[in-house]
Image (cartoon, rainbow, N blue to C red; front, side, top):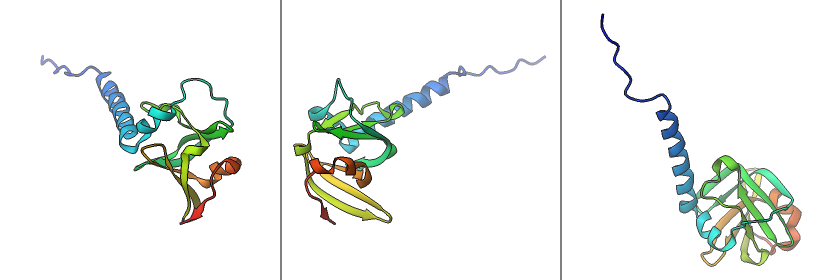
Length: 145
């Protein structure tokens, strides 16, 4: 009778490793794109209550957030958050309207995008124009790219 070799890994180890990698990558993306720089000035620790749209596409810096943003706002400013599975390192933000500067409207195939420079670091923020439309009165006039 030959003994079967025992697996050296417990069955839960791959799950822990994959989860850890997911958390690490999500955290690194917030650093690479500039979300963490925006959070220094615009982090929303409490409150909310903003009328919002879910599953909006956009980008911060070089990082693209395809259909995983929550975008809203009111007279206080633009609310921006990432859907829960991807929120590690991405605290919700409330950016005052006055800090959304240099608005440029760009067409990419059939979609219109609004691009802004935000905050003292002038981080690039790009959001679908349709998500910005309900609160257009608070925004500076857009120039066409």
